[in-house]
Image (cartoon, rainbow, N blue to C red; front, side, top):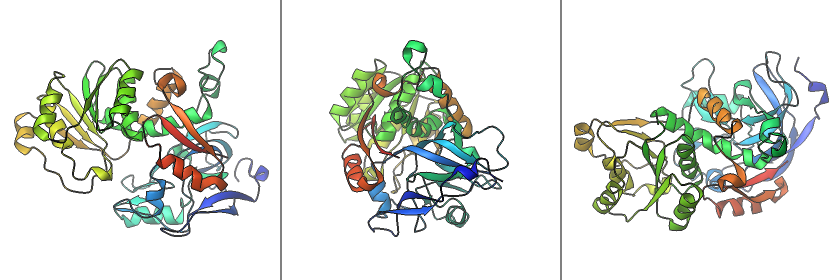
Length: 379
């Protein structure tokens, strides 16, 4: 028997995708049951991702999802009920929801909750379709216990006069983006005092990578084409230097080398960067025995500087998402004030919307894809 199941309503409102390319609808759906291995969460706020319309229209290469389903991949909420095997999570706890779901009997089976399956893995498709189909754009959602992380509400939301950090629920949504870049940075063993290129650096996830690397004590070279966003990143953090791409490999390489020794490079390229030359120039700017992490979604094969990588003993690591230890470590960074959020980090909530306002929410989010900006559903 689940914990506190008797207190849950029978239905809740949710945003539903009935088919690829079809308009979303707000519907009443059954409140899910807290089955073994799961928690039911009362969602407080959910991030409206800038890419949501592209996802629902089937425009993300290699991404598929079953329909109908409830989208919504990143959220903050409170535990409403837990399955009988829960050992620490309790009703009422504030939690952050991790969208990266893995098979329990095979952790290589992976998909993004509330988003879909990359690569068409039939096992991952089965796991999403049969068990974890619905995401977080609903008043109540069900998610694996291991994807719920308890937050220290007193510290994170508490009054600064009483030792708290004074964040809002919306501020905490930034952590759901940080998970991606923090996993990539830890994957290549970034150390305090090192210099790392982040490119491109002006998107929602790549911009979070700039902030995370700086919070970890590194010197960051933020690389991109949007000069205004780059300048804001440098203004918000004294350890961030910027370089505006010219689009020519030799010219960009020469510009990057002016920054001196570069230890590592993290790439979080969007699909639109298929024909960009920045990967080659950034990779060639890294020192001997340097490390490169590729985390983007470029679908086109690119020309890697093969001989350069060999002669310079480069480590090139592809990385998809992150590990549980990364999420736990990130939460500690936030709760100790090392990873700053909200106004103190230059972040802003640029839109608060109800589910009924989904069209406007998507419009505003699509128009604000830059680092540090959040559009949220308030439930």
